[in-house]
Length: 188
Ligand code: FNR
Image (cartoon, rainbow, N blue to C red; front, top):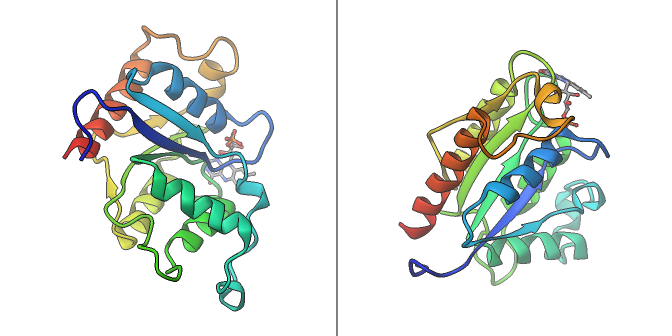
């Protein structure tokens, strides 16, 4: 358990590979708004992960070893998910599938790991269905997911593409609150 003034490492994943991704932008906003004690390790290799294949688990590909090592080393995860066809993008599910499988001599990296879910979309539903789907997946792998508040950002391009959230916006307040809840889970 980290002490009150210890630094916490947050491993942050955007579920989008798109260069101008709103969800990647959201991760950047979260890093700006986060408590000083949070240090972000932002994952930029989601697109390089091999497709999960049981025939290739032992030995695991080096990209998978790297992902597992960084998740294990982190105190918590922050996942920003886009919504693709009412669920999470396949690339994000692929990463979680790799993380859900045993590696020789190592504990499962997501078991009891604190995780906060956020998401942004251009449409009116703001990733609500993707987030429900991601909650179900993370429940299966026994992660400790922040329950409230939910951070669901509809019409995200109107807020994120121009100047970002701004530290005093109502949206920034919810995002800050999600991160505070994540800190509570880390310290629990
Ligand atoms: C989408 N999009 C989308 N939006 C939504 O609100 N509900 C949905 O079910 C879907 N489905 C969907 C499928 C696929 C294959 C694509 C490419 C897109 C739109 C999507 O939310 C939007 O493009 C976001 O901007 C994607 O997130 P990033 O890349 O901006 O982070």
